[in-house]
Amino acid sequence: MRASEVMICYPVVASAGATSSEVAALMRLKNISVVPVVDNPKDRHYMGTISDRHPEEIQGIVVG
Image (tube, rainbow, N blue to C red; front, side):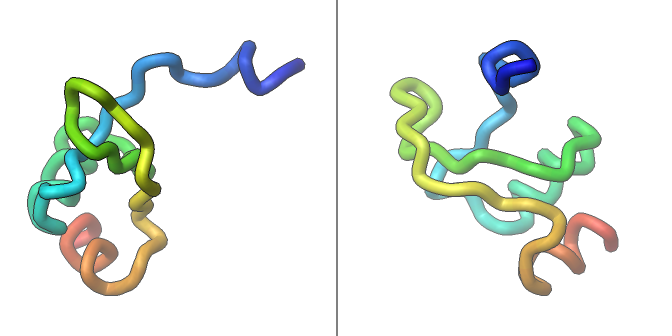
């Protein structure tokens, strides 16, 4: 099976300007452990990824 067959085409994303608290709240609300970070929600240019395995900035807030 190819990645393109199991990928999510329109994932929940966070804007690069979002705070760690906002991303953690989004992760809790959507019950997700990974959030792609984009330049802005309209263009959705991928910049990176935040996961619940990231350092204390996110980990403590998400699990909290």
